Amino acid sequence: MARWPFVVVGVVALVVLGYLSWTWLGGILDRRAAAQAGECRQGELTMRVVVTPSVFEPLNSAAIAWNGQRPVIDDYCLRADVQALDSASVLTALTQGWDTSKLGQPPSAWLPESSLWVNQLRAQNRSLLGAAAESIGNSPVVLAVPEAAAQPLRSGRGFRWSEIPELLSAPDGWKRFGVSDWGRFTMGVPDLVRNPASALALQCALAWAGKKERGPVTMDMLNQPAVRATLNQVAKAKVANVPATTQDALVELSKTPDLATSRYDAVPVLEIDLFRRNLGKDGGPKPERPLYGIPAAGPAPAADFPLLPLSGEWINDAQVRAAQKFSDYLREPNQEKVLAQESGVRVRSTNDRPRTSPGITWLANDELLAPADENTTQQLAASWASSVDNGQTVTVLVDVSGSMSADGGGGKSRMDWLKAALRGQVDRSVSGSMGMWEFSRSLDGKKPYRQLVPTKGIEQQRNALRTAVDSLKPVSATQLYSSLAVVYRSAVENYEQGRTNRIVVLTDGPNDGGLNLQQLQAELDKVRNPNKKVAISFITIGPDPERAPLTKIAQSTGGSVSVAEDGAAIDPALGQLLSAG
Image (cartoon, rainbow, N blue to C red; front, top):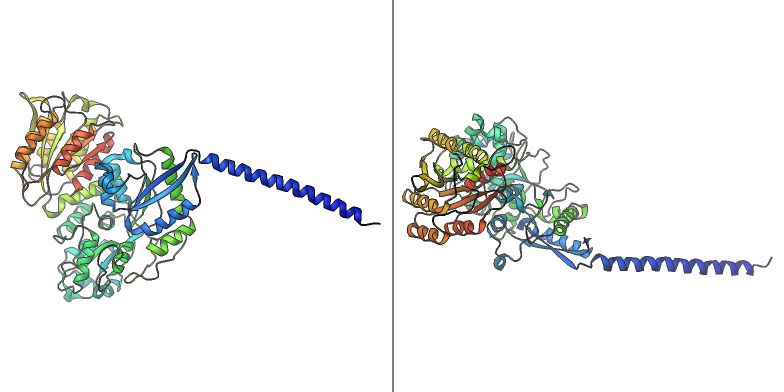
């Protein structure tokens, strides 16, 4: 049989199949191009992310790679723009006013080194939180010491956070590590509010004292005698005049490697920050000799590097979801590998570490401390602030206008929540001074204010303060400015040297009668004394505070404004405020 008919049929079939395939493929390409054109019909949407400097490089690389994939959401082409900014500056700018001339446009997401910063943001104004934060990795807290101290701390049972209170208070703490002639074991503890390593280390020590070694520290634990005694033990042993930041404390320690002449022997620090310090990658001078990071035996605290989508008038829903999408991308194995290799952050998918890391052992530790919740975090910091450096001087001015009887949530009024928060502070404060005033209208004759307890040592008048809190009762209007002028004058006249002096105003409404804002500012200027700085800070209660004039007053005195949208938010807001330096 001739073969040519089969060849002809085969050729025809190939032509037909080729035509159909080309048409089908062309249709897909046309539809994809049309879809792509349609998907971005809203244009480009920038998602600006401010990140702690320690992870800027790997996150910036991840953003470039992510942008190259042309991610799309809600018909927007997404673009991530990463900026390095220290967490303290971000918190202040978000809560007290973002200065675009200095910081650029406000962000739509924030990645600090620890959820402790997220807790502070929530305590000051939780409406700024757009969605739940997601951790992209962690870095444990280690104890940074000079080389000579590293070997003794590693020997025997090793170093444990549970031992810190006893070590610091003993006259021969180094004897525990076999070097009895070294005397006291001392630790530099930078400010808990601005240094997560300090706060997390203290949490771990208190968790052991509360018989819950893996944490978390809770509000109930803070009231336990053993936990309070441990807190005071560490506070009393605190070395005076330690630099305010962990970085500066490490710089000072590295300059005096001889423990006989060093003011302190060790500093709690995040493993990633010590890695950067030893290489001079944190902006400071590279040390001649590296400090050594000693990981704890047993449960250890760790920073969790949360990526937090923000909320604000400058942010739309698409940017919130874009931040969540970028967070998912950062937890993909390829991105985790870069994060681990470049920064030393510990991630789930790899055990890779930076190649050059003097002083760091990168020992694995699967026993991480469960962190305290938002309210406990703030109250612990406030208790610490009242314990160290002889405490602080606080004058509380309470709004007792009729609106304080309004619903505060949870079946309680705003006043009920406020009184519970104040009682807690009175009971937990260890030292320092506290006084209390109330304001409304015609409380004392024609005066809209009344002093309930003068500002004196809290230990001497704790019962008087409790009685004053119990007596608070909503009555009339809100003559805030006239009352504040008198309280400020009293605070300046009775200024206590050597302490942080502050006025804390708790109010739920705008000024109603009496002095206006301009007159109040004039009254404040009359008694203002540069040698007697008294900061005025506000906690506004309710969903729609009159922030602008209060912010103006606060900023002129070095204070701040916090927003408690409901009654439950008052306690953490008060704790956060009283813990601030």
